[in-house]
Image (tube, rainbow, N blue to C red):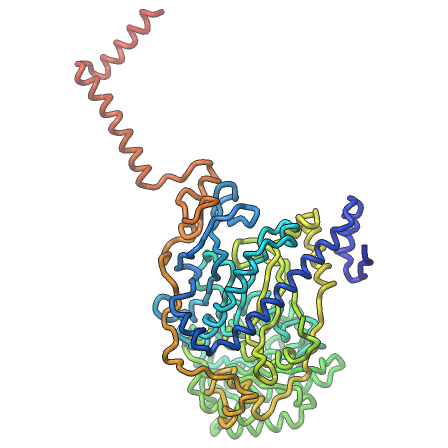
Length: 621
C-alpha cells in the first residue's frame, strides 16, 4: 500500500484500522472509485461542450418542441421501479416492496419557478430555451453510458453509474436518470454546493485570496417594494457567504450618507464571525432617506485604500460590487459625470486599481448608472421585476472564471465537495464537478458546470466503517485528489473583451461599445430565428398537480405509481382508500341490520333472545 501523505491524517486513521482488519485494499478502492467519478465527470463535460456548439442547429431546436420532461408534471416513457440495491426513495418505503420510479432512457429538467414563467411552466427566456434544447442532445451519451454493464461500479456495490447532471449559469438544470422531484420549481443549481465548488472565484485554494467591497443601497425607494428589498438582501448574503477565510470583505450601506457595517476601518478576513456580523446588518436593513452615489463610492474606496496598506493584502483580484435601484438624487446637482470623475480620481490614487473590477446593478431604466458604468469600465446589469438574487451573481462568477478554460494545465481540473445533503432523496454524499465552457470564444467563457454523485452509504460499504469515521476518510481522500487550478490573476479586460463580459451579463442592453458586436472572436455566436423557438418544451403534463408520492411511489418491478405504497413497506398491507374505508363501514352496518332483522322476524326481541340464550346455557351445566 502506498504511503499516505501527511495532510491525509483522517484517511490514514481509517486505513490503519482497515489494515488491522486485514483489508489492505481499502485505500485503493476508495481512491480508485473517486478517480473514476472524476473521469466520468470530464467525459460528460466534453459532451456538454460539444452539444453547446450545436445549440443553433435547426435539428437541435426543431426536435426540442415537446421532447423534454418536467420534474413534476411529466410522466416518463420507460419508467421503472428499481430494487433497493440501486437506491431507496425513503418517502415511498424501505425498499422491501416499494421504491420510487426512475427512467434510464431520458433526463429530467428542473427550473426555478421564476424562470418557468410561461404557460405550463415553460420558460420564455430564449437563452434558457437554448440551454434546455442543446443539453437534451447529451441524453444519447448518458443513455449509452448507463446501459452498459459497468463491472467497475458493480464491484463497488454501485449497480448503475452514479447520477450525473448539468447546471447552466442561466439557472436551467438537467439530471439523468429521470425521476420525480418532491418539491417543484425550487431547485436552482447556482446556489448548490457542488456548483459553487466548481466556480474559480469560489474555490478556496484557487488564488491567494480576493477582496470584495460590497456597497448596497439602503434608501427609501428600496423599502417601498418588499420584493426588491428581499432581492437586495438575498443577493448580498450570497456574495458574503461565497467567500472563504482566505478572502477579505467590507460592507457599506448607503442612503443620503454611508454606514460601514461592523464599524470596520478596512476590509477584514471573511471568517464565519465576520460573515455573521455582515449578514446581521443586511437582515436589519431599514431603508430610509435619499440616494447618494458619491458618498457610497468614496467610502468604499477609502476602505479599499486602507486595506491596501496592510501587510496581509491579498495581491490578486478585487471586486467592488455596487447594488442600487434608482438614480442618485442627492446631493443637489449630482450627475453621472460627477460620479465618473470621482471614481476615476479614486482609481488613480488606488495602488491596486489594475486588479480591481467594478460591478454595478440598478433598475433597468437607470440610465444614470449605466452611463457611470460605461465611463468607469464597470460591468452593469439592469434589473426588472423578474430578476432574482442569483441573476445578480452571474456576472461576478463569470468574470473571475475568465482564462481558466484556456489554460491547458486545467484541462482535467475537477472540484470536490462534501459530504453534504443532496437536494433529492434526503441522503448525503460527495460530488465531483467540472466547469463547462464556450470554447469558441477567446478567452473561453464559463457557461455552467457538470457533476456526479457518490452516496455516503456506498462509500461506507467500500470502507467498512460508518458515521464520523467514514466522513473523515472521505475528507482525507478529497485532500489527496484536490487540484489547484491555474488562475488568471489579476483578470484584466479591455476593448471588445470587456464588451463580451458585459454582453454575457445583460445582453446588448449592458454593452457600451456596440461596434464590438461584429468581433466574432470576442462575442458569442447569436442564434437566428429566436421568434420561432419552441414554446412548449414538455413531452406531456400527465402528472400535473399530483402529490409527490402519487407521482413516484411504486411496487418494485412495476412501471406505474402504486397507491399501495409506502404502506406495503410500513405496515405490510396496502393503505385503504377513503372509499374502501367507507365501504367497510357500510358493510358492517348492513350486516348488523340483517342480524337484527332475523331476530325480529322470529318474534323475539333482543332482550328475549338474550334470556333464551341464558336458559340454554344453564341447561347445559
